[in-house]
Image 1 (cartoon, helix red, strand yellow):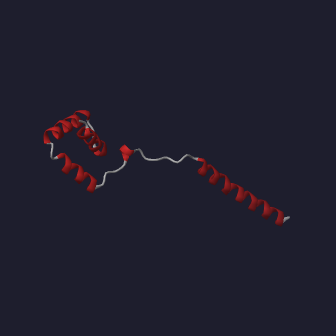
Image 2: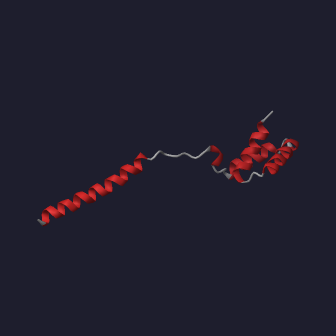
Image 3: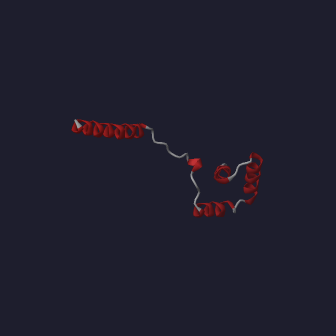
Length: 86
């Protein structure tokens, strides 16, 4: 009788560990949006150097950023888009 009980317990343990693993693999993988990726210090330095050649446009873009209340990486991505517009 104890052998049957041990086998039953082992079967339940195996079944209990398989179900959560299957549920975890069924979840869709999420990817980060490009706007939420962190800027590297080197990339930010390159962007600032490029923008400094057109200070009047940079000033206008910074004014837009301030009026929109953007902060962090969102601020830098907005300035990058603003500076690239013709």
